[in-house]
Length: 568
Image (cartoon, rainbow, N blue to C red; front, side, top):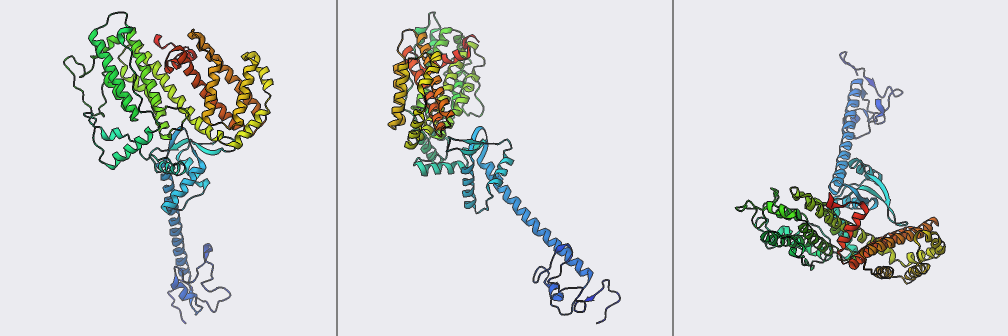
């Protein structure tokens, strides 16, 4: 076979140069690539891989190498593109279902389990736990890991995030809770009154749409945890508080309109429309109503809003000390009624969505109350701040107490845990504790011995949560005796709480030093008893001094901070 002299490449017979070349289906070219039969370049294999006397030149070899590099690049780019798409899907799922929350936490195992269910439902390939953790940290860089829970039941949590309330993950968790507890899940937090009421005229619209029906069912579900039958008690009469004459017409209008405004606030609380409280206070104090609210107010001939006291007259009335005292009494009645509506029993289970909404409300209520009063005397603003802060503290403490009660209830109902706790308490030297604490507390040894025996008897009898609450109530009634002197009554209550806390801390110290496996349970139960004991003592003081509980908490706040709000 003759070759043309114009050929640019040197052709070599494959069969004649077997010592230099191998069949093309086994030949390793530059870059470590091997061309196998029936691949991307079948024509080359057919020409040179059959062993039929074909020739291979350097130009063809270079072309084959370049084509292979292009193919490998396209293949690797496709894999990288697919991986990037998968990562974006995982990141979007995290962003859609989680949000930053300073005190929030999400169980790591539960989150990964829900992530696997999501991938299974969407036919996606899931990543492993470490990879998902890297994705979470890339979305939430300030995230921390903490081990939360009692000893033996603790789990690692992502601390600093929470599940978004309206996300698909939140609904999935509620569905799981429904399967475990039988409680109806809540998939929408919109209040039924928002769907049925017309902001322009306050009229009620019938429930026609599926959204309105679902909102109505959600509200009814949450209201089963509340006491919506609670009405607003009677307010004191302003005339009886005043030792000096006031404008008769303005006083009557103030009493009537203030009462109507408080009744409206109580109604929106029953329907969980907390955001409307700010607008109600704004309308009463004659402040500018935000443009987002479609309600329109027409001023009368005196420049005041229809059905409202002229603002100048209201400011003048608030300068009287008796009027401020009357408003303080009315506010105390209103806020205590709101607490009894939202949390009628601090030990009974309350829906987690309701607890979350109450805590948000407690953080916002002070601003909603005081913002519309910027032009009013500082004395009346400070007086209202004192009451609303006590109300906010009550909501925060009662929701905390309710949460602790639900966590401790599982331990109290566990017979094995209670038996181990009784064994650990039998090892505690209460006589030594009494001697150590006698100088500080100066308690009667008989009273301390009775408390010890009653505590161990309750553990031995596997008492329920309600029985424990009854026992604590009996302890308060036995230790604290009624007294005509209110100051002495409050001082006795404070001393009892200090002694109770000191003794319980000594017992906890002894259990902890023994490295007992029940120390976590012991800490949890002690936290419950301390919180509930404070709750009972406050009510006992209020009853003995003939005050409202919110007033007692306000007095405690002034004692602890040394602040006199009325003098600010």
